[in-house]
Image 1 (cartoon, rainbow over the protein chains, first blue to last red):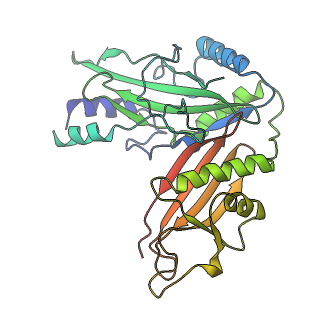
Image 2 (image 1 turned 180 degrees about the horizontal axis):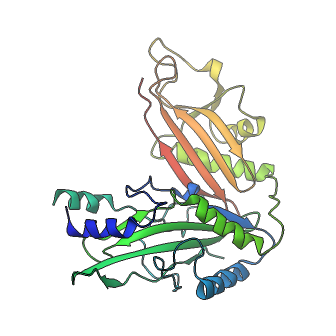
Image 3 (image 1 turned 180 degrees about the vertical axis):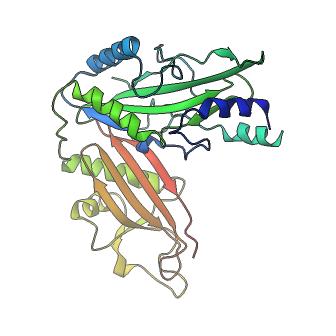
Length: 108
Length: 207
């Protein structure tokens, strides 16, 4: 077993609500979402930005989530651009399980 | 306006107690975009391990934490008053969704002859028949071995709502009882103008 994998287990174990085995990757369509009507997008953006800056994410332990905002150009997540019906790429950047590397780890 | 993303800080190396630098972090990602009915806010949660290394691994916990994410989003929406009353999709939205889905059904295939059944609504029939051949299920040429020939796609479901749509089709060839075909599900989400393909699943049904 790769030593890093054990470290990952140690991170995940205290979180009882999360299984160690990754769940199926949530598709774009399955992501939790909400639609807020009659509000400019910039206002939602500013509100969300401020909320996250000042209060952090409320659902999980702050010790496990260190959330700060950076520009949308930051590349922390592997991006996958999906073609859209109008021929443009969507800006959705899903979280991706890097299965190929996972397999490499398993076989190393 | 382009979709906008709020992402967390790139993960930072942390000592793991044994002197090694392990890298771990959880992140919540919000994506803001403009839907027909308002501003769509989506949330995803993942754990990143060994970022920036050859062993970088991002594990998606969005599915497993969907309830928590929804609760967070609901609280956010609650700051803006009453819940959304979605706009009913009009004929134009319905047509646009169906046309986008047809493109996905044919993805990588030659243009199909589409097959409708009694369950297929009139608007869908009119939309598809305006740019593709369309026949009733009863008029599909069948053989003893083939219920739906190659080049034919049976429309099984069209569900267009205010801000999301699902279209399901079965692409031939199938066995005589419609087994062994290629079922395709296309999911779409509304944009301020038009639709965005958000999911396309295709599988082979084993007979």
